[in-house]
Image 1 (cartoon, rainbow, N blue to C red):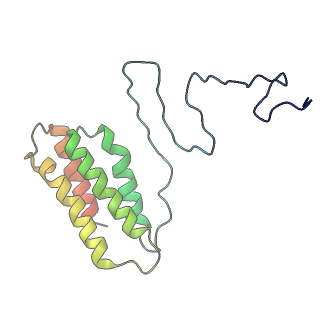
Image 2 (cartoon, helix red, strand yellow):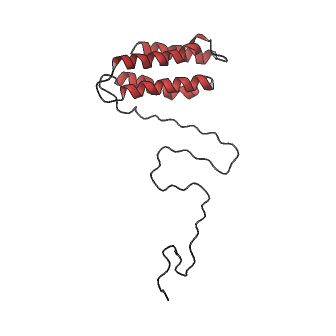
Length: 148
């Protein structure tokens, strides 16, 4: 007879232990996660007010401007598709200037043009359902991006 409990036996009496979890289980690091369970509807928002990630020297002001644009984006009153397009374009700018040196000036210009292009229909009121507040915000964002 074996006096040692089975390796899967946490109780020591030959019965395997069964764990029942009433929620998510993480077996590793989790960062900036948002979770909802056990309910029908959930609305979650997350705002990162920290500084932008590392950027190539000389692009700090642009990174700050884009970071501010991303912070204001959820409250700007844009339609879902316009918000998504603007966020993706802004993140592309950050990706380009956050790369190892040397930063390709042409890629920065194209990424900024794409971002301004995403904001233009909102600023001019062409985008369906655009509010006056969203128009003003988009125009100010375009103007700010042009001056950097």
